[in-house]
Length: 436
Image 1 (cartoon, rainbow, N blue to C red):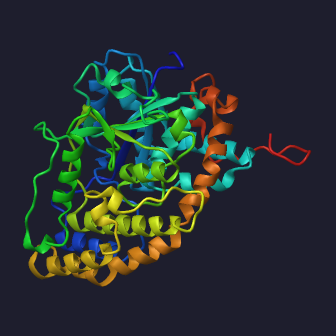
Image 2: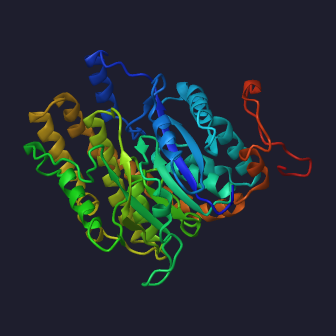
Image 3: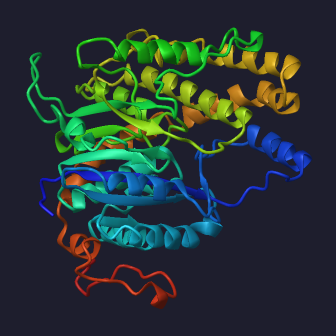
């Protein structure tokens, strides 16, 4: 496979089997506990580890019809550490069912190898952010795999997507890396995500309880802006399941592992902070067919955490002289309408209205009492963490670019018998004061 061919990075998410007939009281109790807890990463649509027809198989089948050369990296993620090994085995089993695809699976073994290599390169402190169970962390792992393999063009897909266009890659790479008339180069672009009915816009809900939280209307207005000519327009939001990045950007700017949800749109903001611009391509799209997701209260909670964190993050950047200033107004209607100073107040009012009039009132009452305060504390505690991580990101990518040790392992030149692994292996120390 030529090094110039793109790497498709597929984040695949797995979790325990959830019984639809489970005890509703137990579910509500769990949701109430989560609503009042510290921030936790929730993968919104994890595949049950026992699902006989996982969406990953559907996606890989659709990739077999693409015309142009490519390879695939499968990044394994779980909501529950107890199913981590089983998820890794299932992903490898699924990948073997498509021998015509050039696939590579990044699971616990590969994570261990990466951790030990970073320790040898004296960058072990970076692994804490890479090991987080978050959308941003798994995106960064995909970028490091691309760096190790020496790929300067990556395309992100999620496992609940379907590619139904044989010319998908040609559209994905259109303009990527080329000069643009305003100066510089086009180093990142997002496509659009359509539902099973071929629609880009979501159905709008006009419930009275959401009069201060019109998420769907705001987002639809943002998407509608992307659907107007010309083909490529500056992006304010992005779709992580249809995203293409050039090495000229991803080697300089990482995803934020601390944002709880919306890491794709957050990457648009990160790029702007560091002087770059992502574009939206209205001729490039993917079909998004999500499965059953987490409950509405939990999704609301993660949104609140993400929006308040984003607001605090932009406020923090005002004190940083080396960053381009980005404001909520510049990102309106979406996400700008949700990351200004009113986000906390509107979230608290919305939670209260849902607790009074909507379903799952008890969970929303917990949200009324806790979620804004918890989200604010989380944002204050972590808004500077991304920038500390980001300062070291370019150095880490440079050191891992075509890294001889990891590249031989990740390319299959050195195979690992996983049945023989009985524990963790530490970096070997030399007798002259350093790792090999």
